[in-house]
Image (cartoon, rainbow, N blue to C red; front, side, top):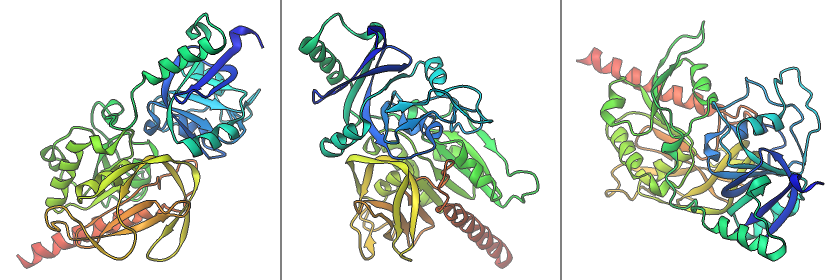
Length: 396
């Protein structure tokens, strides 16, 4: 391997891996995390929730199906860097328009290949997600040995921490747009979806069920939401620390006070937890991938689900709890779903107001689709609200 192809992955704890440059050459810094999905790398790369994260794929062969225009979850690749064991030498798919390597290079995403990603994953499981950097090409200083590693570690340790980061406003849409139900599907209501890093498939899954989805930027006011006369409000997934999302917590409380049904996923689940008065905390290494087992507490049913989160809601798992905010202002809430790998809270359900949320991603464009019923549950809340409004008019 020539010196121009050498790349280094350096972690903030001083761990260093030498591999080969892949994708763009240069320097990138971010929080390093691992994703366990064997498929769906294109959806991972274009998920805004991965903003400012270096993603390690645990599956050894990545890039086999190239890149296409249909599986993207946004208009760009959001990961800060990409690490794989063995990139495909050539892609093979009738849907592909280019190779993964070419797309990474074209979007200036610095990557690294040729290291033992299993060993790296085991290290991150023990030590936890941390800051890291990939360095290649002109970003490598003219040093060798310990001096080189020391300089790269210094650069990594100068990067911002993920804890406390307010990143959702860096990925939100710049203006509102509408996703209509497809032809032949009757419209059942309107949902305002607050984009904290929404994936393209999420409003599509709602529209397939007859919901007209108005996607609005982060920073919208309650008055702005009400102007659309919504039948429900949705908060999406997104990057960053939920502890930094005070404005969104207050916005959601306004939504709940207005009596509007609410559904949140991922970041939206954490914001509901905060709105109800619970705290959040950072997981050691998070959950990322499309093969995460979750149990529905009420039924005991196990779903295989898609995840991408490094934070969780701090709620006791067990019998009914009273939401602590404002002396139980929003009534009773229960933990609806639990992760089976580590008992992390994966869903909340309010018993006295029409609000629920899950930590995982039910739109799951790359699969699995076990959690698709959650969008049906949102439709049920919309129908219940409309029925109640019709009954009030008849009795008036």
